[in-house]
Length: 181
Image (cartoon, rainbow, N blue to C red; front, top):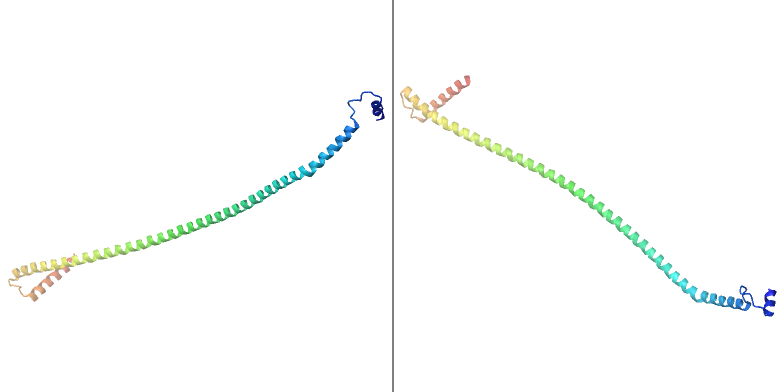
């Protein structure tokens, strides 16, 4: 270093690669002041901005987590309601099937009862018509038998009691002869 000072004092040109001491000291002082100003004014603003961004991001994440938890809870609630609705629908369908089966059974019973009533009414009507036919036939056979008997016997069977006895005897004879065959 002495060679630099000696060279400068002798009037030689200084070496451009070697910096001047006063410039070097001045550069370090200015750099220190600049560093101090940046540290005092710029860094706190950056730190505040970073802190705001961090809190905003953390708040956003917390809000997103809260919203996600609410959405999950709502989804679970809706799924539960859907499951309950499915169970209710299945229960209603089962009740409808049971009611349908009951209605079909009742209708079948009513139809059978109505059918039995109609059959009985038909049988009663047939029996009444048969009795009417038998009565009509007896009266007609009685009239014919009385007329025929009167012709054969040669006496008049105008008397009601006599006529009735003759008819009854004739029908009894017919029935016994028909039963033998």
